[in-house]
Image (cartoon, rainbow over all chains, first blue to last red; front, side, top):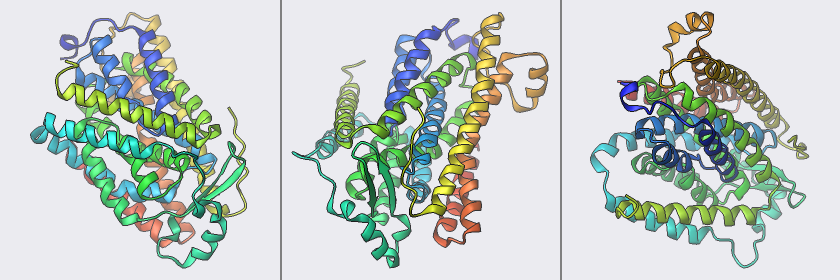
Length: 293
Length: 123
């Protein structure tokens, strides 16, 4: 089966460069990086889509684990929140995978693409980005709020870009759980990385600071893509010669991306994420309209 | 690349778990990368076809003995895929030890969800 569909030779340098770019952007923005890997593997290297997705999913797992290893050491990852949201994100992703066969429709993709354009607008940094009042006075809040039912989800980390400790409260956990389920469904249904949905939901709905959102999103990605990657392996859609250089370079890119994200100012990350979201949305709409082929 | 984390005054217990998870992840990734790099080097030095698939787990030992590059890469990939499960098990053990009720429930639910998803998709 493999020799019939796989190209006889694959350029290892293109694979490496793709992996590095995906790892760097993916870990820096809390997204998987599949949006780079899948098109390059299919369009530039001529791999069948199943092999491209299989390789991409494994790359996302290594990307997410590498980013998490960096972020969690600096306490940027909200472990409690990540574990909680994964509880609905994982079944959502599985439900989406089953729905994909019957509901795959260009109209749905266009609607979601337009929604993403709106989310990109929401994610744009306002005139002058400041910390929300609840984050500035957060240390006090966290102590005062210890009796609150979801105080266990609150988090804190040190931000070297502004030389300040940021503590924050997590708002609307139930809304977050419900939205996560749909985020999982959409990510499988539309073949996009979960991070593209998770990051705006956590940042805008749940009021989690962007850096903690990006770090927690990396943890979520590890759980959601693990199952998908296993499916592709069991079906024989993973080729060692393709994944090996990808994994090595994704790791290098992810280390660099996570280190830079930790030191970067949140406003810069917010602009980057907004740009990335808008580009992905436009590409999705163009693809659904068959303009990209 | 080394980062300084200054925040360590509160949530010290949770920070200990964070450091432990980071350590496990870094160790797992390091071992996995060693295996994958070794496999890739053997691949480039040998004339193995570039389209050969990952090996089934029972054949790994034979593959290692025969210096089959696919065996090294398969072992590395499997190790990477076990890392998220390691985070979950480590967290669960920790939260049980410190008797934090909500995170324990969340970890158990997530463990069940992952297992159920796996069973469902493999069917």
